[in-house]
Amino acid sequence: MKNSSHPGAGLRYGMTYRLPALPTRSPLALHPEFTATAPRVLAWLRPHLVDYFGESEQDSPITDRYLRQDLHRWGALCMPHTRPDRFFAQQLWMNAAALLDDAFSAPWLREQPARDLLARQLCAAVEAAPGGATPLARLLSDVHALLLPDSGSLRQRLIDVGKTVVIDNANQNTVEEFDDLDAYLGSSRRVNAYGFWILALAEWALGIDLDGLASQDPLVHKACTLAIDHWVLVNDLYSFAKEIEEGEKINAVWVLLGQGAPLQEALDAIAARAVATEERFIATRDRVATGPLRHRDDVARFLVEVGHMISGNLRHARESSRYHGDGRRIDDDLAGNTSAEHRTLHRIGTVHEPLVD
Image 1: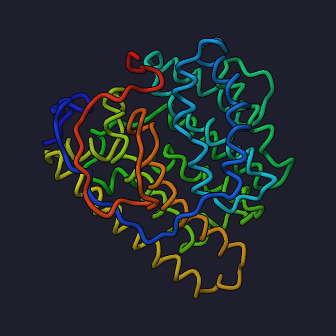
Image 2: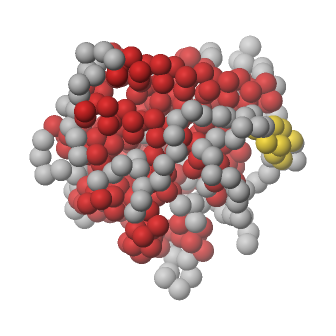
Image 3: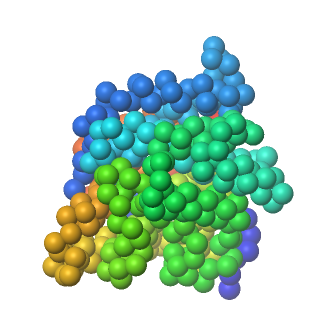
């Protein structure tokens, strides 16, 4: 029987659990210009975030907390071969996209009319329309003005898929709609996890245009879908504690808990699914490399980057204060963890509902 209670029901702060081992075979890399570019990225973002959070330059603790998440590092890990002349804009996009995701979790956006209004504003911003009505719309618009190509199919795909992500986030499903992980992953989760938007961005970042091949070729599309599924599963394992505080309605952990699985059993099942999904991705990518597209250098470069997205997303999930709270430090340089980690469920504070200092 399905459990229709609030996400997180039955979980209590102070509970202990094991975060399962999440090894990866995909190589880890970091864009060589990350360290040098990061201060410039932070300086560009700060006034936009201060405006968004309603703070002042002199007193901006929420902005500071947001920036400590190092969300631009996700892009440096997941698209390490971004063209140097596009890397700065890519780093800004990562922060704008994450803030968009956070915005729909804000406590003042529980009601659908408010969500719909924000969605309309952000859809206009995705087209780089100037003079956004809100600080978030202006931030996204300014980033896209730097990023979008002047013309061509890739420009339109970036706009179209960006709007799709915005609208889907405004109209999220709830866990009660899914019977199992297959139904969950096969729903719009791949969209609202930014999967197809990020893949289009990767083409732009590499300076290639596959002209829809990633969705049209069955094997390339399968490889991309498997990679997105891996991101989703990893994200859900690391973010579920944060999402309890936000009242988020969509997470693989909630799906399995809703089917009656104990917490540890749910976490173990999701981790096993993630590891198996990466293996399927590698096998599919190898089939592309020996198939009819084997002479396409642009396809090969694209799929190399998709592999880095698997390892980079996993590394960022392990290290970011977004999922662990301030003060998170890890000593190794691995993408994944090779053994289970013991955790205690506790409040970490979120951007919109931070803990008292």
